[in-house]
Image (cartoon, rainbow, N blue to C red):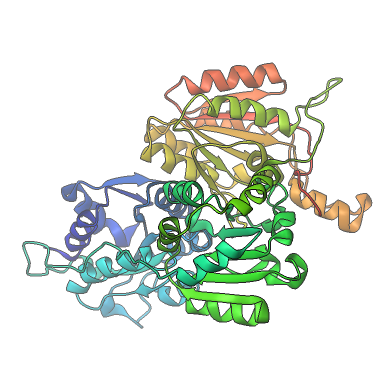
Length: 534
């Protein structure tokens, strides 16, 4: 077996069926080996799109998401998306073609110190020096990607090793690809939660409503406790969480389970929590526990190094409903679904409001119990997150990066071909990877993209308006006549230009019944996202 065959056989053993890739010189041996291994290659138009797709695949399926990209500039193109995968805590394996080992230091074609570049973005990066290490490192990295705080890993693939004969006709024994389940001792944490009057559990991206739905449902049913997943860069101002800041400020016990103490929690500052709050932190990383001791000081009552989902499962079997907490739990539930009152309807020839668009999208999502919602971008994305829900959801996440929405949607539709997949984004966001409509057409990924087109980078526009005044607006306006739907049509998809509610309803109904990807370009008022400022 060649080195490339060792790689693909190791991937196959790990259950990999699909790889997202853009071809290049150094990875052609892997392409050839994928044929015999029966691994499907989704060939994208940009390396960043391949990594975004692997990220969404990992989030939606729980499997390792695999991106295969070439070296040099192709490799560099994937770094922004890798940054997003890191902050989404997604188990992604980045495979990158690399220059030959025997040419190291000689100025080889596209020679680059790849491991140095990915070091801040991955849990570990490896570059094999022997052909057998290709399979060994693949297994090791896949297991690592799923362990502890999940996240991306990187394997650089020297071209000469991919073409080297291993001397094996079968894949040698490899380490297990499975994560070892644990049973943390949560007895002290249970006591703390039982004694609380107003407890709240806050989780991170890895334990959100899409990726840990069963775990969260079991915990809520068994304990009645409020459990709040946080995965938005807007933190306490996340429009999908209503008055979450008020909830946190009133809680007397806040338990962070796999939730980093970062900017989304106001760095744990006293002003964001009750004065008498008791804090507990459970996290797989020792560094997070160390930071908690520094940030929370005498407010910190409990720490444990443990896997987040295993901890939630342990609480489900160790903690029961406390009658004195029921009224608090009901109040929290009410506050999380509250939304600021804003004008919902266009009048006197005005463009549609974002809220109206959300209503039509939600109506379509409600028709499919397996629907998937992708929300990407700034202000329009926040409207979507505030007013639209689906059984599975992928957002642009804690990284705050935009542009991955189309790629996320393609991966979602390939993973779940029978589900309605809607990707909502702004007119700024769609420009990053608009060419991926070609990928969607070739791969029969019939998702629906809804562009909230307010003719500008609205988040930045609002920042400038607030901070510098209306006379100093610059660099935010976009072409109101840009035909995004026309570009999608030119790439093989469906296209709809929408200015009224009737046109929107008709376009959504038409798109959901087609086998082609669709782009609905909806002209909307540029409204600020809904948020509570308390």
